[in-house]
Length: 162
Image (cartoon, rainbow, N blue to C red; front, side):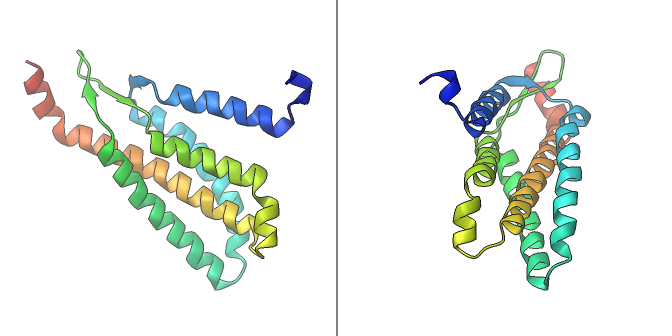
């Protein structure tokens, strides 16, 4: 397989996989810095969702349900995330494989799922908006809940270190 044989979608997927693998390394957790990407994704999601909310009530119910599902999923992922305290008291953590897999599935659905969704009679823009709602609400709730866990247990973890 030569580089010229790769389609644009395949190149994008390779880059995304590399990016997602970098997210799995251990790093310091800074709450406000961690909210930059979800904040940008929230803006993009808002643009997609507002179009879908102008449709029937079914769209609103589906998108609201996706947001609630994402919040719950983010709390579960954050609960399963192992947190470590560094020598200087900073929070160390790894990205969640579940969250990264969710992102990858959203991108795969966008790149390759259009034809399948159209064959099933589903609106591809509604499904994309649903996936965006789930992933953004997951990202935000995961980060907020991790930071909450850190603040709640910070004193206890520091005493165990000593």
